[in-house]
Image (tube, rainbow, N blue to C red; front, side, top):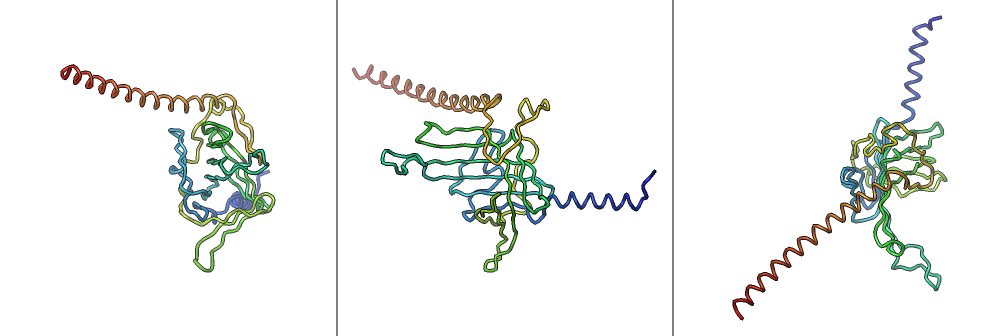
Length: 258
């Protein structure tokens, strides 16, 4: 039996309202913490050259689109909690972490926000001088759940502010609207792996950090090391060439003088 046209129209309108309820256009834009030095977009991460740019100050930034995509940039730094023989934090053991990821977000019926990253695209650059001689560059993905959020306008400076509350209700540092429309990299998968290209399933994100060190991760690290090695080889070759020119000139002077 065919459904009446009115029922079809009402059903379509209901479905559209449900889809629209999964996003909140109040979030649209790029938000950043008080330092205003960390922003999402190409100034933070270059996916083509696999390069992350360290901001001058710590902070974090979130961007949202009006069709359900998001991007996150984090820069944290501070003393590492390694213990010295006298059981105190060693202030010389500084640690810094730069993280970037993007994906899709949705608003749940209870008002919480759920951010699901594209697992193969996220990147992390970690520097821990008391543990590693060099910075460690890896893939990174972490699902984020915010119990609640609020968009409001500060009464004293009229700045539009975004307050996010973690899954446990703990507040994050407030963020302020920096750009609208948002400043973001393309929302599609930027660096698909072989598994993603063939349709193989990827492990889902969790509320804890994951580092995908299997498969193409070796290639990721190897490519970065190869680029660094080539740069060093080029630098060393230039130095050797100029050293040779200098010795030749010195020998010529010595020949004519002595």
